[in-house]
Structures are given as C-alpha cells and as structure tokens.
Amino acid sequence: MFNVGADVIGTAKKGAGEKTKAAIFETALELFRRGGFEVTTMRDIARSAKVATGAAYYYFPSKEAIVAAYYDQVQVLHAEKVRLELGGKAGLRERLGVAMHSKLEILKDDRKFLGALFRYTGDPDHPLSVFGKGTQAQRSQSVAIFQEAIAGTDLSEALRQLLPWVLWLAHLGMILVFIYDETEGQQRTHRLADGILDLLTQFIVLTSSALVRPFVQPWQTKILGMLREAGWTGET
Amino acid sequence: MFNVGADVIGTAKKGAGEKTKAAIFETALELFRRGGFEVTTMRDIARSAKVATGAAYYYFPSKEAIVAAYYDQVQVLHAEKVRLELGGKAGLRERLGVAMHSKLEILKDDRKFLGALFRYTGDPDHPLSVFGKGTQAQRSQSVAIFQEAIAGTDLSEALRQLLPWVLWLAHLGMILVFIYDETEGQQRTHRLADGILDLLTQFIVLTSSALVRPFVQPWQTKILGMLREAGWTGET
DNA sequence: GTCTATAGCTAGATAGAC
DNA sequence: GTCTATCTAGCTATAGAC
Image (cartoon, rainbow over all chains, first blue to last red; front, top):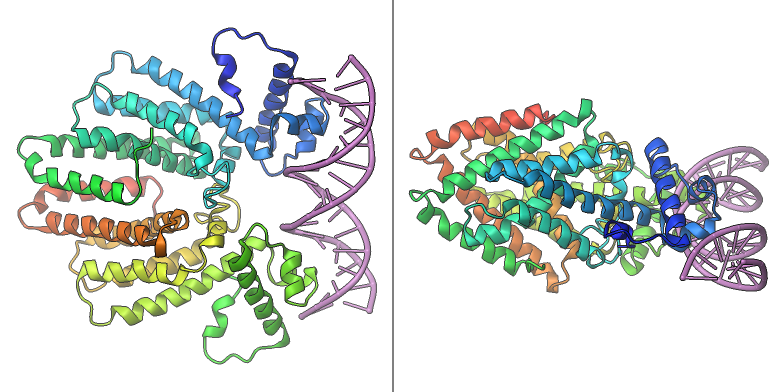
C-alpha cells in the first residue's frame, strides 16, 4: 500500500518525488514517536518536513495512511528478519518464537502510535480497517510470513491451513497487549507470547500423537468446517 | 458511565436536565441507526433534538460518548434479559448460549454504529478504550453477567475464575464479527457463536472427566499462572 | 508528474455570556 | 443548563510554477 516498501526492491533510483515522500514519512514517524499520533498534526508534519501541507496530502491521503505505510514497511522488515533468523531452525516452537518476537523487536519504539492501526477496526467499509477489504493485500503478506514459519514442520493438512490465520490473529492480539504493556522492554508481552506458544505447540504435539490423534481428528475437521461456514475462506 | 442507566433504578423523577439529556440521547441513536455514526454530526443531533451544539457537549463529552452511553444501557438490558432467560436453565452450554445470543438480539439493529465502541481500542489512555482504565466499571459489569451465566454449573476453581474473562473477550470478538456480518439476521455470527460454545463446553466436559482431568490439571494451573504473570489480575 | 501557497470547508470540541 | 461564538485540525480545492 502506498508503495512504501518499493525501494526495498533493488536499487531503484529515487526521483524527486520519492525523496519528498520519504522526507515526509520519516519526519512524521519522528514526530509520532516524540509526541504520539493524536497531538501531531499534518501541519506539523509538513512544516517539519519543510513542505506545504498539500504536499503531505499529495503523498498520503490521510494521517492514518502514514501509519499504514509505516506498517507496510514493518511487514517488509518482518519478512526479511524472519527469513534470516529462521535459517537452520527446524522446530515448530522455535520458528514460531522467531516470528513473534522479531515482530515485537521491529515495533519496539513505536508503541505510542501503533494504536492508530486499530482505529478503524470496527468500520468494515473503511479502507484502513484491519479486517476490511482495503487491507487484504497486507493481511495476505502477514499470513504468508506465518506460513513460512510453519513450513517444513510436521503438521496435519487441517492445521497447515488453519494455523497461519490463527497465528496472524494471535499476533494482532499480541500487538494490542504490547501497546498496553508498560513493563520494562515490554517483557510482559514477550513472556506472554512465549507462554501461549508453549501451550500451543505442546497442544499440537499432544494432539498429533498416534495415541490421541484419532480422537481429535473429528474435532479438527469440525473446527475447519465451522470456520468455513462462518465465512473464513482462507483467502490467499 | 454518564449515568445513562440511572433512570432504570426506581422512579427517579426527571429534572429538566434529565429530559434534555434523554432527548439528545434518543435523537442521536435514531440518527445513528438511520445514517450511521460517521455521517451523523453533533450539529445534526443537536438540531434534531432542538438544542444548541453546546448543550449536546454539556451532556456528552464526545460523539463516541453517546455510543458509550448507549452501550451502558445495553449492559443493563443484557443483565436483565440474561437473568430472565436463565431461569430454570441448568446446563452450561445452554446458559452460555443465552448469554451470547441475548446480547446479539439486543444489538441487532445497531450494527451501523457499534463500531464506534472500538475506535479507541489501541489507545490505552483514552477514557473510552475498551481495555482501558476508564471503562473498568463496565468491564466488570459485563464480566459479572458471564459469572452469573456459569454460576451453579460444575467447574473447577481455575475455570470458575478464568472463564468469565475468556467469555467476555470472546463476546467482544463476537460483536466484531457481528458488525462485519452481512448475512440475513446475522445468522453467521449466531452459528459461529454456537459452534464455539459447542467446542468450548465439549472441551470443558472432556477435560473435567476423571479419566483426563489429572492430565490437564497442570495445564490449567499453568495457564492461570501465566495470565497472572502477564498482568491479568482478575479485577472485579 | 511534483510541488507551493493559500484559501476555505467541515465538524469535533471549547469558552464564556446569560 | 443552555446558547452563541470561536478554535482547531483534518481535509479539499485551486491556481500556478517547474
């Protein structure tokens, strides 16, 4: 969205526009980090970036769009980081840990304005709603990261389909907790993530054992069927 | 909050203020239902209620506050409805079904503006954040409803503590799904709720059986411990 | 296509008079 | 407790420079 991660692809030489856009973007993030999202006005951002207010709107259709663009960038960073740190790691638990903790590390200085991402959660038609149509592309990218995290591990077909979405949802919840977490370095969120992942993987291992599996198989099928009926399409 | 459900308590005679407030409130809801939350302005509300804009703000500190007040009223209605419909019902599954479906029934015409409740979810300090300090009282009331729903059923101490909060959280998620659900009468949400409750209660029954219980007991303890460490206080 | 300057609209929110 | 006037800021629009 808004092509923010575009310059990551190769050595695209920046036109004049790209530079201005980047300046506005960086300035905005700095102001958001310092003062938070609410108190920072578009006029502030434009002034600090030494451009006219209209220029800011030329590149970003709304203030929230800047945060959305930031989040796009985060996803690119996250994908890279996960790919890098996943190398060699084969265990499910360890791989999921990488996916979750690396996300938090990327977001660590930006709790003050991350909340803006959730502003339109309750508005299905808003282009920036986390669950809306307008953010489908980002959602898919994010889910893909979790798909990669579980790749190569031994899972049932049902789980292979379901888990990435569950993890994506869980990771959204984690970000919310993260925003509210005032402990030093947000250890609380990190520990909670570990706890949940421990439980989840233990549960998966348990239900995958030959002893228990025939017992839980129908459950898995039922859950999948239920979610499908409830409108979960597994959209790529 | 904002004392909206106050007139439910007894036959408090309405002062002039109470009447104005009620007029603004009712008018706002009507406009919200007709046009949605966004397009309805405070000026519209004030005009329709035949008061000045300032008067509206005198009673409701923000537009969202009107929705919050509405939700307070919903909670009162929900508590009443649940108490009524719970009479005689003893099974856990049935009781939980009452709690969830009755909530949806109360909200059924108001999906268009319910989303406003979630607007400040990502802002810990905002007085109207669903998870914030400012809404603790409502949260407790809502949790209490679920406590009542599970009252009298045979549950472990750990579950008795944990379940109401889990149900409250689940019910928030249900409301979100509800808002996004465009199916006739939001059957999809109702069915999803049923599906989840089926699974949940089956799971509880299963893990409560003498055969399995010693096996899952340590898990329950671990979950509780983890959540406590993660800052879950079980605040009344 | 990129940007400035500027003016204006709208609507949420506030201040102060009565 | 209610009103009028005002402020603020997100956002739009326009006209023009390059």
